[in-house]
View 1 (tube, rainbow, N blue to C red):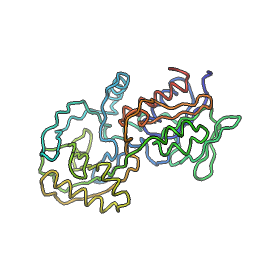
View 2: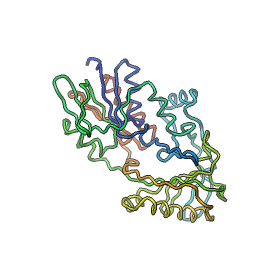
View 3: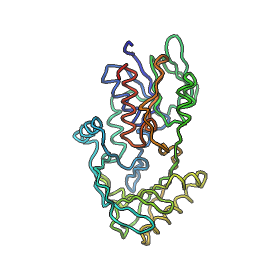
View 4: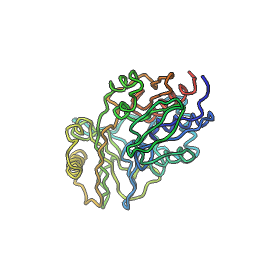
Length: 328
């Protein structure tokens, strides 16, 4: 199979970024398209006058050898740093220090610092929602929600959450059918800045009771401001039951749960913001790596093709790039 000269990548989260970087290093011209104004997909961060908040991915670990080597390169470049918080587990039996001793990494000074660094020399179309892919004799043509066209491209890599990928895969029913099998779980994330520090030794905790799934003193991460900032993430089940609850009400409910979880009165807040993730993470792991229709030049990747971690997204993008290049 000849090397493609141009590849369109739909989605600029870690899977899309990983595929783009692998292809660029192989000498292939790539263009990324993302419906959001920012970068990084679920590596999203929110900057405010009261500090920075990682509202999506909270941290990541590195287990696979190739990913560990890549993370070390990022670390040496100053794009990520290690984060070893005072970590707890909170369940119905109470609060105890977590025995989870994995090395954790975060983007520095915020999670989006990593995606911005990786995208710096890549052509990216922000705020462009691709709604249709059409295969012509000259190659693939992309159409966005405003009726604009892009292309032609030799190959297309779809690197979006599975439900968003399905409508783009009509030319490859077998890929669409596979993506339709994937369940994605929702989540609510509440960013909150407090006027004074909380009365707790907890800097981060896995919560296994009530509506909360994860709580984190965001200011404990390296490179963040000194303001007392926290991020609260709900369980998927609670989010599914509150998909249409107004954000302000969601914030009130999860703040109330935070006080109950930590058994402490909460100080006054200076900022509260709730963000809903419709596709926060895949419900189950998979072993696909990536999906491919080589005869069409259409490929699909994402954490849902492997595991719902940043590492899974990076590895899936790598799989997709190798498939585009005819490597195994």
